[in-house]
Length: 212
Image (tube, rainbow, N blue to C red):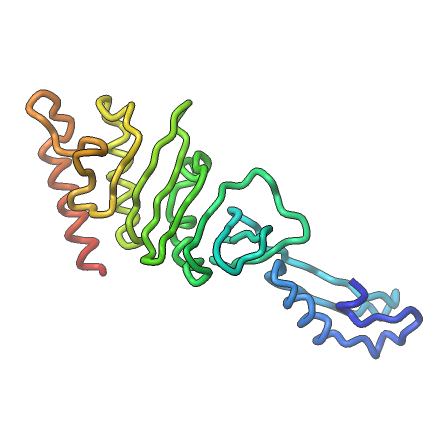
């Protein structure tokens, strides 16, 4: 990018503005790191660029149509954006850090099934995923206790009676699912959670609450 480097054909190598060129590249947004170096032996300028890796396409107020988000929560517009990434909808750009928490904490196998993630103005997230040929909505609530919520999700989704559910509410990990969603409390007929597992969940809630 000659404009960014302020290069002119035939310009003396010593007059190339190295720091200024690096600063111009960083201002492009889709670059996370850059190093510009002179090579006095072959009289060239070498440019090492570390582009940001998009994890999802992101939309929301005051965002460009081709905006993406990386694992740090940085929103950027690359020169060419991939077409097959999941979408994230943010109530406002300041919630990008909340989105990065969900992206970094949620296991890759679950992220691969994600069709979309919506984060409202309170920081609560709802995720749409594909489970076989059907869809499933997960209400994560806020990003607190996300590891616990994921553990409870894995236990819930493994229950045979929950194979045809369409919604799971994990907003409150101490009482993760309400009546219109999946079943969490073991019934007399199908006691899928042993007493040991129930104690484990309670211990995890208490431990995570203390950590907060």
